[in-house]
Amino acid sequence: MLHTALEQILPRVQKPARYVGGEWGSVTKDKNNVDLRFAFCFPDVYEVGMSHLGSRILYGLLNDQKNIWCERVFAPWIDMEDEMRRAGIPLYGLESGDPLSDFDIIGFTLQYELSFTNILNMLDLGGVPILAKDRPGLENLVVAGGPCAYNPEPLCDFIDLFMIGDGEEIMLDLTNLYQSAVQRGLSKHEFLIEAAKIPGMYVPALYEVSYKEDGTIEAITPKDGAPAFVQKRIVRDLDTMYYPDYFVVPSTDIVFDRAMIELFRGCPRGCRFCQAGHTYRPLRRKSKETLMKQAEAILKNSGYEEISLSSLSTSDYGELSELTECMLDYCEPRHISLSLPSLRADSFSSELMQRVQKVRKSGLTFACEAGTQRLRDVINKNITEDDVLHACEIAFKGGWNNVKLYFMIGLPTETSEDLDGISEICKKVAYCWRMNTDNRQRGVKITASASCFVPKPQTPFQWDAQNSLEEFRGKQDYMKKIMRTKNVTYNWHDAETSVMEGVIARGDRRQGAAIYTAWKNGCKFDGWDQCFSYEKWMDAFASCGLDPKFYAYRQRPLDELFPWDHIGCGTLKDHLKREWERSRQAIVTPDCMQQCAACGSNRLLEGGKCCV
Image (cartoon, rainbow, N blue to C red; front, side, top):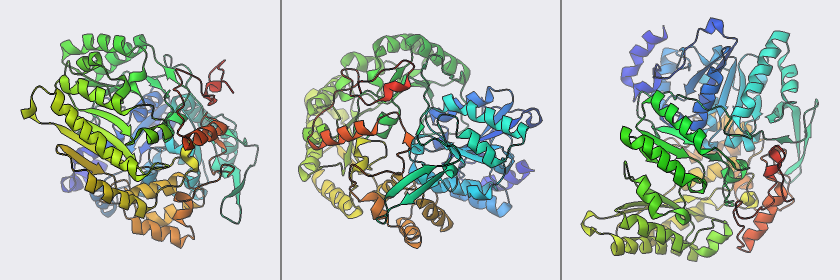
């Protein structure tokens, strides 16, 4: 029946391959022979969701359980949604075609705050009540995890429970408890009380939040035995962690269409703006032998012609030289290209460059983040202008003529001199190319991109005010005037979406009403410029009696209780305070491999110690 209906509407939509399933590597099971059906939902389009490594890992993990069938669900693009609603087709799992309402557990990965309205839209399109209070039974249990779960509060009206930390570590605890609860005939409330006893599970219905007259948090009070503090779960040994030996091979182009293996989790660098660098701690590495085994399995079973080494800072992997040599021994005869993203300018070498380009030479990307050394020290970037220019010199001498430089504007303590510094670095990189290329006729493409800084929870900058929309626009106009260097293309990120991201990132559970109102007013795909409406979001907040400036533009005192303070990312709040104070003095903190900064995360390891 679904197949017949899709035949009628797919010719009228963009990229119909997004919606048909049946890809190589997708898993189908007899639904009558499984005990639990799990819908793994990515609240964005197919091309984005299929590029996400974490989703691929958890899809494999769940389907490796004989009694569980996990299916993929993506947000249909606007044209497809319109057709589905007209035809009465509910949102469905790609593997079975069954509506979302047929699934026992509906899980969302929270990668980006501006995807939150898509969560509501997907539930509604799938025939599932949006509000948690309107789902009284255990069927259609809505759960979530991922980076944005480190401040789950804006979604508390909609999500039944959040999984904090590594999904591989906690997911099967959830599914085992759910199956047990169904067998024992537990009510939803009884199930949630038991779920809250599992480390890493946060059940928002079991917490009451009170507020002061100024709108800040007074207290967060657990009830029914829920813990006062929910610490994240981590995989301690990545060598023994589940990793799939196959990937679903997409039937259409996706953002990152390649095999991926994960070198390590965590990051030793401690950039003060970076949420992932603090929430993925402690640092845990895979052995070279494990990585080779996983890479060969993925490549053999998927047919991919490119493989990427994934991490927050690839060049910090201790055995990178030996690993790339072994991988190239495998890849070169098979014409498989090796991609090394997330390289740091201070770790780029001619030896590494030669290995990267053996199969295919692609562009290079260096994240400078700030235009002056003072501001790089404020954010603890730990690279210098000389590092960037030295890396570019190596690249240009080696024949590269395509370099991307990433910056941020609106960083704490930023001045006009810091903005001028961005232009100066770009000029020096262009001059570096002229001095080091052996073929000027080929030309060079230098792309400088400047995003708008968003203060994130669980980072040292969680106390800082975000630039206002007017300030961002003024800085962007200034940058357009000074970025006039030949061969340098300047790109900038939309300031309105960055401000809205900042509003939600540090939101509390009162924002649920605004998110719901924004969705009712037509907001969805808010991370896409062609869909985002700043005015609709402002109207939604105003109609709910909330001031977005309270969340985005306010400098917070160091003793303020945050909406997420009962959620543990492993890094101590006292450490984040110390790092904030050091940032005001532009004092650099060495990376973890040189000196322990006493962040507290090593305590999560078995027998782990920390200098606290």
